[in-house]
Image 1: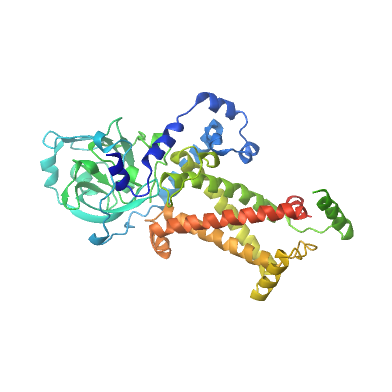
Image 2: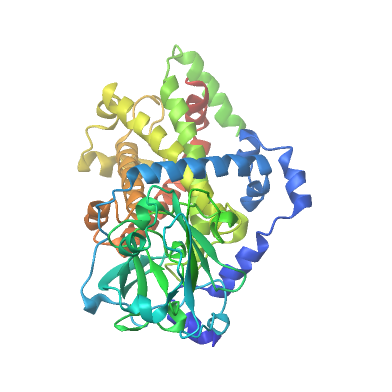
Length: 261
Length: 210
């Protein structure tokens, strides 16, 4: 299985990535030791990763990341469409990618699943898969760009999220749509409202014209071609329209929250 | 090292000390050096998340600890690099420094000066004048600096700046362009630092101006 995954994601050494991620776990002793000496001078003497453990440098970096959120929101053009591609350009096989193995991907029974709708919406009735399948669908062939740097072109079919938000009477003046998912350890992610209303942001039910397979997020994924891959939730359980920033699985670990492309 | 220091002293007394590197050049130079090192080291860590070639960079020479940390560094240092770079370009053109220092670059001059350099006959008497090899290298590295920023921007915002991505021939090609520019800058850095150490008065000029 491990070998298969490696083949699925050309050029990505998953083991190395996981090992790197594990090593970053905060180490309080190391952190305190370095905090004292953080300054421009200390930075110029930096020896690799140690500087990032300094909490004052970390605070500064977080502030810049927030500033970058604002810059990206300013740059975001709600009418600019992500480039689309011919079907022949689709990457096959399309990579499975997550912070867990494919074996650990959620197994969801479509018949029992219901999409919960919460927050600033008029109609909070949960939606069955059959009901969702009846909504008008569109197909897009766009590039999925991973925060790691690789990219792959895929074909996604589903209902534009903005159409669904209209149907449920969502307050689209709210700041975020916050998704909760079935991934282990509880994946969640906030999506800014302007991106949620982008014409290509989609509640996806099919990949390459087939019912969305488990590997890509059955029963429903949110496809956001104007965001990095980690801001495309899979195995969605609920969406909440909210003005509160509720954080996200990767966002809380330091990935830039806007992460627009 | 001692003999070099002595010759420095002689050069200083022989000619009245004149400013070789104006203060604005020194400020943008060291700011750029600092920003560039942060960008390169965090960039190596980002590269490691999805290597383009069959190698990764040792964690001992990368910055950020993991992909998320490296991205924070990269997208913070980029502002310093870009703003500083724009100040440099603006002042370089406005003060006429680029025109005076970097032009003209002729093939004949480059060949002659390369020969002279390789046979250790190149003169360093007047540090305010660049020889042809220096002119070519500095003009070249400024161009590389512009291309690495543009390719980086195109990877950062491939949808909003899709015209820029097209200019590079697509997202995947932009990644290789970005990497190649990094490699050229690192190669330049090695030569640049080695030569500054061989001719210490040039290093001194970049610190105290003369």
